Length: 325
Image (cartoon, rainbow, N blue to C red):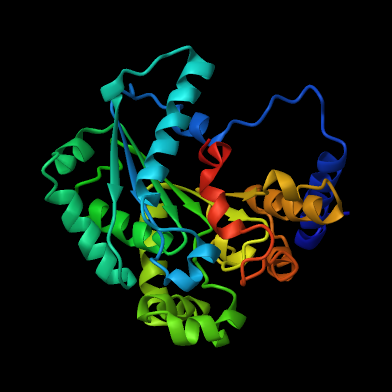
């Protein structure tokens, strides 16, 4: 008897469940993000790392979302360390000091305003960033929070204008706790955001509506870069008090170039049913299967405390080196 499409899908899901609980010991370890990107017929000699920070919060919220000053340099320094460590451990290659060009971009405001500021900073840099970007063989973009939509729109513009050549260069975006579908909707009525934060913070809630103007521009940019072959690594954070899991892992986007991951602070990690269930949901998406909206349903129980108690998942994710590898 011929199987129906739904029966085939069920068998694939059942196989994934069995492999999760009873993994094959002889199966080699899956390639990490850096390994996937460096497997190329091209010789990689020059690498560019671009850092894009999140929104600049009022001091009242800095203890919640993290101190913004210096985070772009921190991102590129962490990525530089991760790349050098990867080449050293995997291929026994020590990259020369000038092999990696670090480009920490800084500038605050609403998303499209920031794209203009960062674009100008890059192309008009006295350090020759525009030329060095064009000469690179491998381009990494490391972004956090609001920096995710900013970096996606910026990268789409760079590709459109030919400043990044995806036919020759391998390009990847690391989105850490990115606001792809907005913050927790309940935060919109928070007194802290309502009375202390500026328009560029309130703009983030427009991503809760997929039909808003900024959401549509973001969707268009995502389609452009994914269609161009750019790889996007979306990493959510356990106990994130600002961004729900489904938003951080880009739940609404379905493309083989998106890889989803989860960061759990060591102090909070317990190998219990919930943590395994979340990881299983992400494994399903990475395998091209539906998680039946598990990421959405599990986001609320994984929310951190917005008033600063306990683990500050939104601001600790970018301190972990393993996130960059």
